[in-house]
Length: 149
Image (cartoon, rainbow, N blue to C red):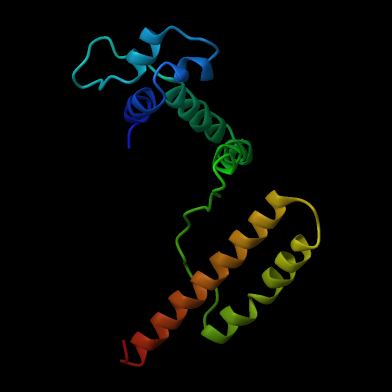
């Protein structure tokens, strides 16, 4: 879904109530944000597009964690969470070594669960998920090498 489509749905679902979300903005401003830029010369850059541009800029100057924190904050508002999309490229030569490589990540995750920092729990869980994905990839590679895929 594109940002203008989100505003289009919100405008229809919330009516003039959406104006209150943005500090009593003019309804016409919301209408501009909700227009398909492919068919409207009056389309205006909306707050979602501006936030996306800000996050890309933060990432480009080395502030990736700050950008990810903003996304996690938004996701948390609707009881969701963000997980990094990372390729599962095994970093050990055998499946057994990949499995053994999981142990420090399991410990870090369990330790994070004993604390009170949700972001730390999320980071530790994501690292453990990457390790599990590497195990699966190595398992598939070894199956293929044995001719059993």
